[in-house]
Length: 218
Image (cartoon, rainbow, N blue to C red; front, side, top):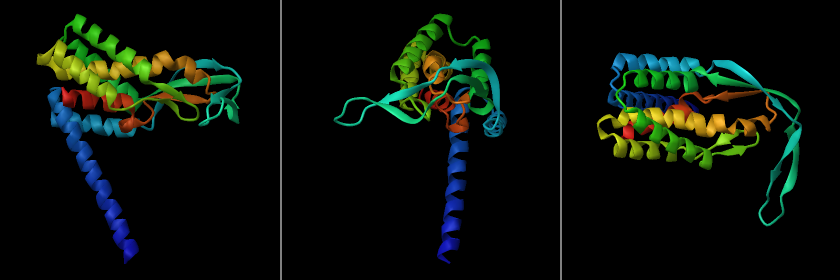
C-alpha cells in the first residue's frame, strides 16, 4: 500500500504541475493576444519540439582544460574530461529556441512596438545577459533565470506601457539568445562537447521561460 500511495502521489503531482504550466502559458499568451487554441498548439509544439535539434553550423574546438578554484586555494587545472580538439555542432532546439524566436518575428511583424524602443530594450537585456551569464564546464552557459524576465518587464513598462507584454517578450527572448548564447559561442567552443543546443531544455529553457515570464509580468 505505501508504494501504491507513493505512485498515486507522484502521478497527481505531475498532473498538477502540468495543469499549472498550461494555465501559466494561457495567461501569458493571452496577454500577447493569442487565443487558447493557439496557446495549446504552441504548448504541444514546444513539448514535441523539445526533442528535435536542428544543426546550424560547426565550431572548431581546441584541446584544453578548465581552470577551477577551490575555496582557499589557488586555481588548479582540471584534468577530468578536458575538452578535446575537434568540432562542436551548434544546433537550435525547435521547442526551446526556434518556436520562441518565431513568435518574436511574428510579434515584430505586427509593428506594435516602436523600433527605437525595441532597440533600446534589446541592447539593455543582451548586455545584462552577457554580463551575468557564465560558462559552466560540462553543463553549458548558466545564468540566473529570473533576472532577465524581470529586467525585460521593467524596461518594457517604462518604454512602452501600452505594448509592454510584446516588448518584454521580444526583448527577453532575443536578449537571452544574443547575450547568453551568441556572444558566448567562444566559451562554448572551449567545452569540446560534440553538440551544443540553443534552447535545448525545451519548456524549461531560459530562452522560452524568459519570454513568458517577462510577458506575464509586464
